[in-house]
Length: 507
Ligand SMILES: *[C@@H]1O[C@H](CO)[C@@H](O)[C@H](O)[C@H]1NC(C)=O
Image (cartoon, rainbow, N blue to C red; front, side, top):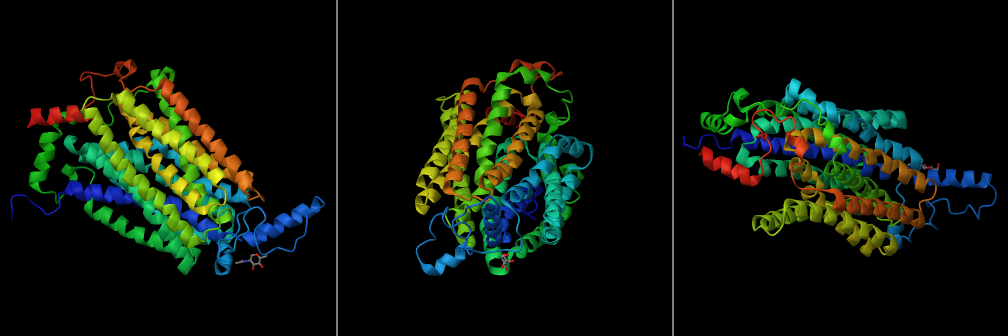
């Protein structure tokens, strides 16, 4: 055997499976927003709308019952053959507000397990917590069609439980990373984990559309859930809580961990007290507000675009899903290039950390806000609308190098707690957005209503831009040190420069 040991080091197997695990969780999260488009019987909703309007008195003619409010939406795309494609009815006559509840239920669960998730993973085995998190999502995804046939309330419950399960995944992965990521590889490994989230979305959206189109909406849940089962087996066989617990790890790799991780022992559960001082800290509130406002725009893009594309722009489901995936692909490419360029400019000493965070957050808020305004003016110009939505989604990736990386700058000792706090607040838009859109478009899927929705979103993104530009900081805050124990800076959160230094001093 060559001295290099096994073909694939255990830590790369771990990284790949974590990334795929996150892709599964994100894929199963977004598939409903595609599937719901074909699960709804728009014809019946339109009839119900006409009936309720007749109660109120005069409504001009009820002769066009085969289209959902054609007078409000854009004309069907050019050819007559396509016109029928815009009307794909499913079995469920859920009103828009009900759809909003169904799409939002996931986030009610997700928000509840954010803060406890990390604790549970620290106390028990993070491996089993992550496995359980994915398994819950897989099982309840497969149960979704059954639930839908019972009642929309059953779907609410199913999605709520999926959210509960998914909520623990990120904190638990954070716990495992402290054991499996060598200091010099931490940035790469966490980027790969982020990539898993975007990748899950990129794959799930078109895949859901094709499945729904070819095999019916139930197939979205059965096929995706079934494929994800494979991961559940692989995870149990190939992943262990720590390198020391891995029975088949190569001795050379284990040796590498033992030598590199020596000084890092004990982090991840060191700072058990709550950073109360953060609550009076401007830079902390800057992150919290930016995270919350930005997620409003993010969930608008993630959850509501398929609905807008069907009802207003009149794309059919398979076009719709393919086109919804293009923005996430551009987001992924843009975030890789953007983070790389910012690192480069910083290494040259041209910009400070504070500038990086503010600039990147500005890209992630101002440009999407302009795109939302553009979409509402683009109206029925389908190409312009799709191009603007793609640009908006792409630029929102500015968040990764902006406020999302800012917790570690201002308080490395409390980064996990701060992330749990801002992510909890930032989940609120997850259930506000669908309900807001549902109320706004209830029985009135019109361009005018969507313009109000898009302008509101832009305004919220501009609030983010202003608050963050005024309050944010890339510097460590004094309260980070008030309870720092003996070693001052926590070894878990070193900047790339310090890591390099560490590596060379240890080598
Ligand atoms: C949708 O509703 C209409 C009117 O109630 C009904 O005729 C049609 O069969 C329904 N479509 C499906 C797929 O259930």
